[in-house]
Structures are given as C-alpha cells and as structure tokens.
Length: 413
Ligand code: PLP
Image 1 (tube, rainbow, N blue to C red):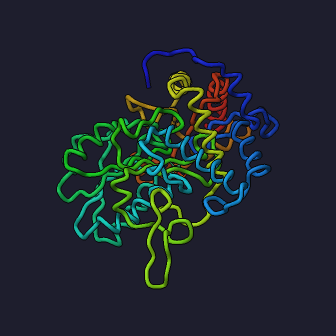
Image 2: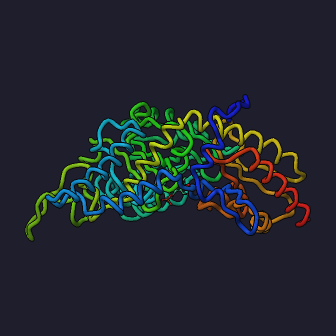
Image 3: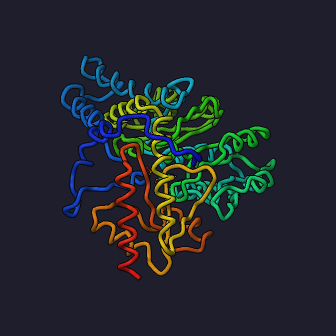
C-alpha cells in the first residue's frame, strides 16, 4: 500500500458503465460487489467478443483447411499473442493456454515433478499459499518422495526472508510462491525470491492469480521461470488461463496430458510430440475463452495497470482507515506492501454471520478460509470476512461496506 492517497487517474463512471452486471440489484438493493478476488465481473467488450466469435468465427482450430477454421485459429492465436504481450513474454511458444491458475500449477507440478523430482529432493512453498499452490506439490512429493518445505510468515503476513534463505539448499528443485496473497493482500518480494533461487540455479513458479488483475507483470524483467494466472479474475471468461514457462524448461518437460493437438505423429509403437506451446495443449482448447481473455487483457492494458493500482490503493487505504475505527475490528494481513484485499474479523462475531448480514444489504463479500486453511491455522482463526476491490469499485462502495459492517456488528453484539 502506498502512503499517499491519490485521486483516480481515470474516469471511474465510464469504467463502471462497461460492466453491465454492476448496474443490477441484489436483494432489492444496488449491488456492491466486493468479491473480485474470487472472480471478477466482465466488461461489455469481452461479452461482445464472445458473442462475435460464436456468431461469426466458430470452428475448430489448427485443423481445417477451410476459411472458417482459419478465422477461428487466427482469433484464438490472437488471444495468445495478447497474453504474450500482457506478460511481456519473449515468444508465444512460452504461452500455454490452461483451464486456469490451478490447472497451470498442476501442469508444472506434474510434468516438472515427473522429470526433475526424486526422493529426498525439496520443493519450497510458503505459509500463505492458496490450496492450488499446495496440493499439486503435495501430490508431486507423494509420487516422487520429495519433501515440501514451507517459508514461515510474520504476524503482519509477510514472508520471513531470512527463513527462506535458510531453506534454499542443493536439495531444492523448485520454489513455488504466490505473487499476491488472496487472503492477506500481501505483495511478496518476488524479484528477490527469484534472484536468491537463481543464485543456486533453482527455478521459480509464481502463482499470479491475484497479481494479474492489479499489477503490471513482466516475466522477462522478473526472469521468472513459470507464471500462472486465471482468465476469470482478470475480467475474462471462466475456464481459461495462462501458464507462462521459459522455453528451456518447457522443452525439457514431458507432456502433461495426451490427446489430439499435442502430437506430431502417432503410431501404436511410438508417438512424437508437437512443438511448443501445443505440446501442452491436449484436445480442443477453450477457443472462445482464449478470444475473450485476449480482449480482457487488452482492456486492462488500455486502462493501464499503474492507473488500476493507484485507484485500488486509494480505495484500500480509505477502507482500511475507516474499518479500523469500528470497535473490535482487526485486520488480518497488515503487510507494508499490499494490494486490493482486506481480510478482517470483529471480536465476538463469526465471519459467516457478518457476511450473511452484508449480503442482505446487497454487499457481496467473501467469508471463510479463502482456500488457505494452513494460513488460517497460522493465525489461529477459522476464517475472515474478505472485501476485495477491482478497477470498477468506487469510494461509494467503500462507504457502503463500512456502514454495512457497522450495522452488522451492532446487530450481532
Ligand atoms: N491462487 C490464488 C492466490 C488464488 O486466489 C486462486 C483463486 O482464488 C487460485 C490460485 C486458483 O485460481 P483458479 O480457481 O481460477 O484456478
């Protein structure tokens, strides 16, 4: 979180007008949508792109010699090029379409794990990981006999970097860390994490599910080895996401799944695999998803990630300040460097009850463990109420949240 409160550098009313669902009502009240960390709303531009694709371009890709199939392929590959541009990847060979962030991490844990993890090797994750960046590695460790090591965090919800340095060893095969925590909002010092791992030639995967909607990500500047994110959190469709991987790793890794598209030749004796990125894309891909995702990423770039960050920080600071004035309210996750998420608890109330009352007021927040049960255990809490902001949220949303939380707290105590 920055210390200065800056005014939005763009026209928020115009941005909101792009999102038809936000004009609607919920429980008879104007919707206050504060759960974008779970899934974002979609702008008209993305809805139009999906509609256009199915009305005018729909066919299978990379297969037909006929014109329509070529148009579908062009639209699909434009989505890949837009994803490459969004991440500043060096080549579209390094941009693999997956189902989402979870699928991307599973691809690496499974494929990299099969090739590079052996008994006694170590995989480093952190105490603030989403289950999607824990369980795939537990599976890989189970199959290989490797051991999972966990970087601890401090009470503010920041990684203890001294402990990370101690965990890195000649046994470490990969480090897999969340870029921005979905439950705490912490922005991790990913460049430092990567540089320390690279000093020992250890590759790093970043879980970018919560970073991509809010921050500019440049995989070449980071020099990261793998980067995964989900389309539905960046204003794109569900069912599509991206795994960036450095070519040298993707070339060395075996295919994740077998089927059509990922092969060069098949006989019953031997199959040879397609070139990158298709080697990792078995079966008919989510074509419309890739088209919609490309438009969503372009939408973000047109607004500008710096503008998005400034606007959201403005909301985050105001909400943090006002919520902390409420008697008995504590914020879980008070890192120096935060993005877009406020997790909180109110003494004497259960997060679920708070969330239910807020829902009655038309305010959509998340309650529970946020798929980070080990993190909740670390703080010895059952869960939190989480409000998360996106580019389309306003100061009015913040005011309604604060008023709603005050009302709910008074009712519950
Ligand atoms: N990682 C983080 C930090 C997340 O917040 C999420 C979803 O909330 C995921 C991974 C998984 O994303 P998906 O369910 O879209 O695969």
